[in-house]
Image (tube, rainbow, N blue to C red; front, side, top):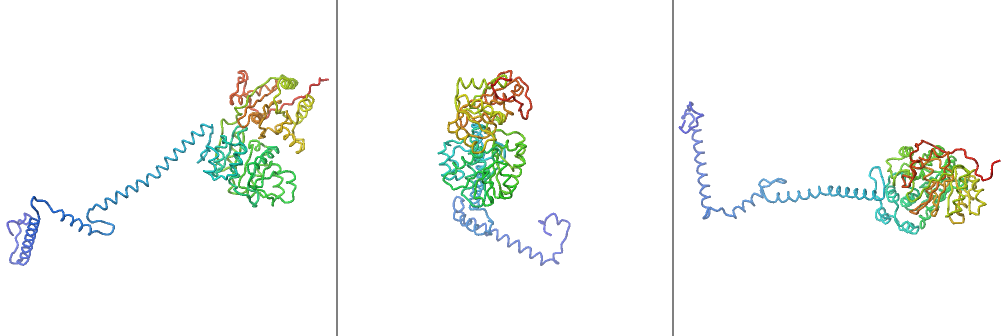
Length: 532
């Protein structure tokens, strides 16, 4: 082996003669490699210009050649094109990533605007994905595609700006969510459910009853029918009131009706006779829902709700008072409902000036009433008593005092009851004596004073009674007489008064608060005749 051989071969001897051919091949290869290296170095030396700079043309040619040596979808050598494409792709990806971020930011901004609007109008909501409140009635057209006839009718009826309950309840119902709402008396709850109902129904149809409104009294049902027809003017919607004559008709299954308005009892009778089909009802409204859920009406309401078997039905409940048990029932009936509260729950309107007057005894109440009428009579005045018998007795006393007085109670025929309400609205009657029949939902726009001649049997009854005045932003007055028998229940009424901003004597607020269901003591007859 040669001296230049690697140390790895030290101590090994090769027979050169035996492997002469193999050694000759390796020697030839070394000579070829050396000659190739020398030739390449000579070429490089010849191509270098003065100054030792490499030709730019040569580099460009090499770059072009390297571009050609590419596999589809993969570049063998580095080039500027993939880098540019990568930058463009990165920019596009950044834009795609920015889109959801911008959308999220806009959602958060809208939620902040909604929160500020609700705070401004004292609206409290709870539920999932609650719709944004209305800023004005024009949004009904831009957001929900409201037809011009409805906007025109609302403007003609004096609805220029939505009230707080209308701002929130209307978009909730139009977005397809069920709703139970509580708002003060005279705040426009009727429009809050009739407007989205008319918008969703769109056009008259002959496919049966598509909307149902339940009211606790016939007077309120009549009023709701009248107001609904005013709002639907210009469209040929068939809006019907369930009257005794309609109930006696031969076949209710073929009743041409889009919106039916009724009391629970009459509707239950129609369902019992299996002549009324409610399977196509798309909208069910329970007006004055806390009254409808009282034990006496629960069975009737239950049968109506079961008869409305449309799986896509939209239910809603409205009232000025919303006890906890009504909320619990609402959640069992409704699915994913939105809760809307305007102001504080179960409070009277702040536009009503409220007073408590101690009359001493039942005789003292009649004397105090006559004295107040003699000093100043500011009609129209609505007087509430606890029973129809006492309504008749008080009417008999005041009928001879040269006062235009009338009375309404459940013993009167329907025609007389309607006449009494119409005369009071028209101003022909100055003083109207009523039971709690008129305390629910009745809208007398210009009632200046409400007198609780008999102490209300509950805080809810008090709120609904005095709510007949001070409606639609107007001011009103409420006077409540109380006797020795009523003193222990004063604290319950005083709490309602203080919640609405009225002053109450400190000794009344110091009284214990009692849990009471109904306060209807046995009272002596109303009379100024001396006892035998």
